[in-house]
Structure formats: C-alpha cells, structure tokens
Image (cartoon, rainbow, N blue to C red; front, side, top):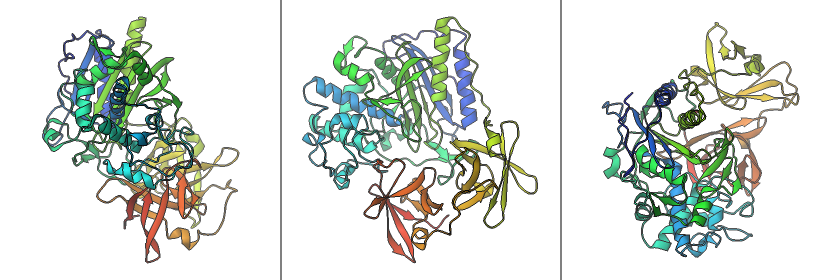
Length: 553
C-alpha cells in the first residue's frame, strides 16, 4: 500500500484528522482492498471547510507496478449525474431551463409514445419518467427513445434510467449551444477548483488514468478470490457516467455538497437551487440498488445512516467503481474511487467507516474497529439451507452448515464454500457451479424446499409444489445465453417451473405483442426474442438493444 502525502484542496489547508482516526482509516482501506481484490484506490475525507485527509493506495497498473498517486484519474461513474443536474440547475438560475416543462421543449427529437402528459426534466432527474435503462452509449439513444411506449404515467414509479440523464445532457447542450464537456468544465470544475478532472473518457486522458480491472470472467458471478484482468479503454462523454476525477478534486465536490450553494466564497447555485439539488424528492428502491438509494432527487440519493441524513451517489463502469457520501447533519463527507470495475463492490464500506470514525471522534468515543479483511463470509441462517436436494434424474446435492458457513459437500467428501449473492441466492466456488448462482426457494411455511442451478432443478422430500412436465418447445426455443456484441454485457434465460426466467432476476412475464417484462408488472424494460434459426431464437432485444445468442451455456 502507498499512502500519499496529504494533499490540500486548492487554496485550502489540510486539517489533521487526529492520530486515532487516520491509521484506522488506512487499515480499513487496506482490509477492504485485500478482501475485495481491489488493485488501487484513492480516498478523501472532508468537513465543510477543510480537506481532512487524502490517501492513495495500491496500484494504478498491476502490470507496470505504477502506484496510485494523488493525481491519478479514476472514473466516477454515475456520480456524473449530479454534475449534469448541477449544470441544469445553474441554467434554471439564469432563467434558461424549467425542470417542470416537457423536456421536448429543449430536445424535440425526444418523443416516447405515451397517452399521458409529457416527460419533464423533473421526471428525468428523479428516475420517475417511465423510461427503461438500455445498455448503450451516445446521444443517438435519445432519438431512439421515440420507439418506447411508456408503461405508466410519469411520476408513478421509480426506475433507474441512464437514458434519462443522457436526455438531460442533450437538453443542456441545446440550452447552452455547446458540448456537454465544455459546460461541465465551466459550470462544475472551474468554480469548485477541480483542476485535475476531465469531463469524458478520451484517448489523451488514458495515460493519466488508472488502468481499470474486472474479474477475468464476465459471464458468471465471481468471488473476490477470482483473478482480475485489464478492461479495454473506450471514448465516452455520456452525461450519466463518464467524468474522470481524483479524490482531491472530489473532496472539493463533497465540500460543496455540505455547504450552502457557495464554494470558497463564490456563489455556484442560488439557495433555492441548492436546496433542490441536495434534498431528495421521491422514494426510490429497486432490486439490486444499494441502501444509499432510499430516496432520490436531482442526481443525488439519500438515506438515513446511523440516524444521520446522508446524501451522495455511487458509480460503476466497466473499469471503475466509486462512492461518495455526505453526512449533512455532522458536516462531514468521504469519497473513495477504485479501479475495480462494476462486477466488484462499490467502495462504500470504506466511506461509511470513515464517517463513523469521525463521528466517534467528535463524540469523544473510541474509533470503531477497522474493517475485516477476511474474504470468508458467514451466513447467519446457513442452517436453513443445510439439506439434501434431489434432482429428477436422481442426482443429489447436499449442503452443510459449518458454524454459519454454508458449504456444498460432494459425495467424495470434498466441500466448497457458498458465498451469498442475494436473498436465498449463492455462488458456490466449485467448477461445476461456475456459471451462475444456486438459487433456493421456500414454501408457504418459509422452509427451503428446492433449488435451481441454470436449468437444473433439485428438491427436498418436503417439497409439495409444481411437478409439471418439461416446458413446451416454444419456450425451450427462447432459453439460452445472449451477449451484446463485443461487450461484457450478457444474460442467460432459463426455464424454471415451466416459465422463462432471467438469471439473477426472476421470471419473465408476458407484456403483450410478443414481448416480456421482468420484476414488477409496471417495469419499463422489455424483452423480445426473434430471428429464429434451427428452431431457436438467435436474438434477444432488451429495451431496444440487440443481444445475440452465443454457443456457450
């Protein structure tokens, strides 16, 4: 680990954190990096007026051994959204933007099909527009949104959508009549003294950026013990997720969030706009979304952490992960940036440890114990799964509880650890279970009575549910493994209990006109299978983006 010299924000002194906090933060960062196989990480801790600590840890490039330094750039991912929101609120202050007007006033090409009122900027900011979240890049997707039919009135539900912020960025460009990258550099970076940040991924910035890494296998869940590999670089300026920054620059941004709309005496947003910016509007929550997203506002999420109001955001791209949380009650904030891609965890554990350590110092209490660096994971209810399950072909799977550690035991006595990946879902670190999670299911008495791995089905003797025949050929023709061309994004479609099932998510349901939905019945994502050859669908289009069937299971 390399601990960088403390670096001040421009024109600000660095205040000491206290001897009892700094070493514990360093130890917690080291533990988190060891536990989660993080190559490099940059960290900053601030209060309203000072940068308290900036640290650089680990490697910016594993192959060359280059260390992370105070000026190493990292992608901040979806923290970019708040910078788009800030820039548009500044436009509102100037009378150039109305967040409650239809966004088509600014982007006429944006016209999703709807029988309800037009989508407003407010709907897009708060992820309540009804738009899906297509896996694609570039402004062209704004015009492609005209092919979508909104499944519910704007404002009715919360559904995270990068497309919404792509559209807001396009509106900002139309309002200011210049590229988004120039706007953010002037409206955000300049007034906040973010002297090292870049508004986009470009080839010119690649040499200054940490090399991004992610698990070597992109088609399966991975425990931290799996190796990482470099992730390819690409150019992108999407307003929802491709700012490059340093921890020191993001320290200034965090200080701004703790303030009143000014930074070091310069007014950036009016008091009214700043209040809008830093207070969440709507209840959020969606499967797979971190706890931070309890409520959502204009590019910032909000939660209550240890009784304190916390605002912030996480970020994740193919190359990087990020987390910023600002405890507005205590007047402190922390940010962590890592070069482990989005298959790994966001570094919020480090951020939240630092916030708790400072609060303890303020209250005169001992610092909390440092984070645990052991990748081994206990399962409090492991006894629920400690059973023998039998497949329809007579094969059995036996799980055992070794003191809150869940293990799969082979007939030869060899045991493999199970890592929790969600409610009743586990990754088993055994070669024959490498491609997906083992998903357990409960009966009406909440007893675990069956499990699936891929399309394989196993049950206990207590199982009394569905026992139908194999799925019809029409569904078998749709199941398979699909991949976005030349991209890491891929999905598997299974058949479980006679219906299609999206790996890691749940059953597909008919949405009419030959398309399917998943999750809540109002979910805007749509799945459509077509291009049949040899009796099997060769293409799966997810919310307008085509994935192609691959030959692997």
